[in-house]
Length: 180
Image (cartoon, rainbow, N blue to C red; front, side, top):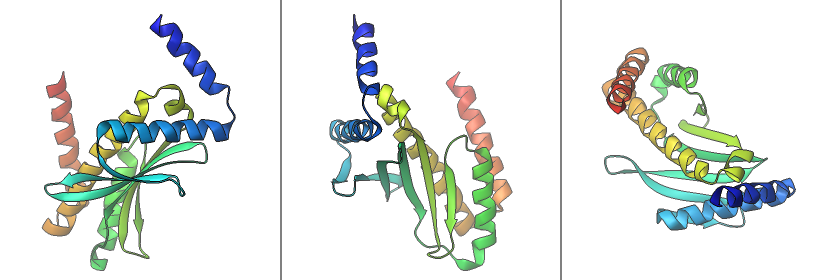
C-alpha cells in the first residue's frame, strides 16, 4: 500500500507546471532543515537557505541551498581570501578536483580571491525522490570538507597539488575498502 501511495504522490507532483514544482522542492528543502535542526536562515524573498555547518575543526562554513532554473543547487565558499602568489597552484588543485568530481564544480574567483564549490542537480530528482535532497546536501557537505582540507594543505603546508590529490585518492580508496 505504501508503494502505491508513493507512486501516486510522484505522479501528482509531476502533474504541476515547472514553477509549482520548484515551489514544492523549496518547501521540502525548508522542511528538511527544520527536521534536521541545523542552524540555518531562510531567505524567503530571495528563495535560498543559508546553513552554518562545521567544515573543519571549529571552522564554520556557510552553505547555501536554493532552487533555480529547474535545478536544485548547493554552494559553499571554500576560501574567502587566498594568497595571490598561490593562484596558479590553486587553479591546478581546482582543475584536479573538477576532473575527479562526478558532480559539482570547484571555482576559483580571481576578482575576490575566493574559491567555491557548487553542486546542482535536475529538479526532477528531488521532486520525485524527497530523500535525495538530503543525500545531495550530505554529499556536497562531505566533499566540501575534503576540498577545504586540500586547499588548506596547499596554503598552509605549501604541498604540491598533485600530492594532495594523490593522498586524497588513497584516503578515499582505503575508506571504500573499509566500507566493504
